[in-house]
Amino acid sequence: MKAQLRRATAADLPEIALLDGRAFGFHYGEQELDDLRGVLDPDRFVMVHDGDTLVGTAGSYEFAVTPPGGEPVPAEGVTWVSVAATHRRRGILRTMITELHRGYVEAGVPLALLTASEGGIYGRFGYGVATVNRTVEIDRRQADFRPDVPDPGGVRYAETDEVRERVPDIHRRWCARHPGALSRSAAWWDFTLLDRPHQRRGGTARFHLLHADGYAAYRMDGGTCWVVDFFAATDSAHVALWRLLLALDLVPTIITRAVPADDPLPWLLSDPRVVRTESVADGVWARVLGVPAVLAARRYAVDVDAVLQVHDPVQDRGGRFRLHGGPDGAECTPTAAAPDLHVDIRALGSLAFGGPRALTLARAGLIGAEDPGSGGALLRRFDAACTPDREPRHGTGF
Ligand SMILES: CC(C)(COP(=O)(O)OP(=O)(O)OC[C@H]1O[C@@H](n2cnc3c(N)ncnc32)[C@H](O)[C@@H]1OP(=O)(O)O)[C@@H](O)C(=O)NCCC(=O)NCCS
Image (cartoon, rainbow, N blue to C red):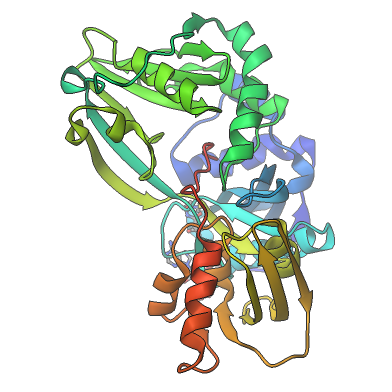
């Protein structure tokens, strides 16, 4: 086979959808293709042909992602990765990822993100797990607020048009407070709010709950309430929205991914055990393509001054950088000075939003001090500096 790689055009969407549908077990009809035209940018897609046959495709969505304490940075969310079963394990994925990354670097985009169908695929391309998907199940009938917890009120049901008008701003404010939060474009909101039957995964259409500083959407599926979006830009909105959700008579069970490990919800209840973690899995994976841009974009919990040797055997985006950062900002510049810490590029992706502890990654051999004796204190400081005051949450699946 002589694989030919090229960029996609708008006319390629039906062929791309056919291949992707085969990989993920879905048939796209005319309606679905029309819906997708708003959110899929063909310029961001590559295609691999064997003769006239499309055998590989991959692309990305344009996002901005919030680093801990900093302003959002541009990121490409790699998606629609599909290789025909007839042509698997011949290097087509590798060819496509290499081309996509090359394009991101050329465009000055410092981060590539993705969600993985299988956990064993993307580490080899320099990605590390940066956020997690935690699914919790709430025994609503046993979920009583502590008597001293206020009831701020202010939540009401809304219809789709009002959500489209008001919720993007609430979501932007939520993103500003949450490391790892992914932006949503107007086109993304339009697509989300189409809420077609195939987007519902067997549940009802969305019910929208609106607060001046928060938004929640849920679906009903039998007796179970699935909270599919939950964004509270203030702690008061968080309490108000949960008060409403936990007041849904006739609902025995609420399931959601919107309660991270450090969410205050269990602490607001008389019996924290009613919020039960059902599963924790990798969420967004991050691949650092611009080390200085990513490390300088975030704030650090304590002052840190260290020379990092970043190892990127895959794509040569590593090197030696001096990081000087603290609660008010950071600088990261190439240097020839002797290294203090060695950091694997995958670990840097994991640390981009402050997900796992740097000390945990060090125990896994992905970070290490140049001098294991004297470097221990610096490693602990780096760990403290990188740990944000909130667990990262991406908030948008893709
Ligand atoms: C996953 C998929 C894209 C891989 O495509 P591919 O062209 O077969 O991959 P490549 O031949 O380029 O493989 C590149 C490397 O990844 C490895 N790899 C590929 N798929 C893998 C998997 N599912 N699990 C573990 N390793 C995998 C290969 O062994 C190879 O390793 P090496 O080069 O380091 O030795 C393809 O099998 C597919 O389309 N699967 C169904 C849809 C899907 O899961 N897409 C991913 C969405 S996130």
